[in-house]
Every structure is written in C-alpha cells, then in structure tokens.
Amino acid sequence: MGSRTRALIIGSVAGAALGVAAAWLFMRSVEEEALAIEGAAEGAVAPRHIGVGPVVRLGISILGVLRQIVDLGREE
Image (cartoon, rainbow, N blue to C red):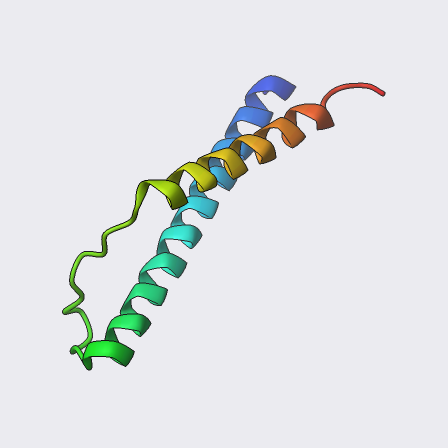
C-alpha cells in the first residue's frame, strides 16, 4: 500500500470518527438543554433551529483547520 493510499485511509477514518463524535456531542447538548428547559422525556427532543451565523462561523473555522493541515505538508 502506497503512502498516498495510507494517508487517504487514515484521513477518512479520522474524519468519520471526528464527525460521529461531533454529532454525538451536539445531540447530547441538545437533549440536556431540552431536559433542563422542558422536562422532556429522553428521546423526545424537538428539532433545533440553527441560524446562518453560527453555521458560517463554523465553516470558516473548519477552513482554517484544513489550511493548517495543508501547511503541515509544506516544507519551511
């Protein structure tokens, strides 16, 4: 297996793991907030509206992280 293939596999697995962890943390915070505010039963969580501003800020932050990853591969 070549180094490019290995890097792609490792990156894919790491990205999937981070995505699952982020989704789990997000859902946990939404459920905790719903229980604290409404006293809802577990699993009965209403969909949460997310505004455009936080999504744009998150996208810019992700682009910054991707740029840092690209910079790791460049020689100084």
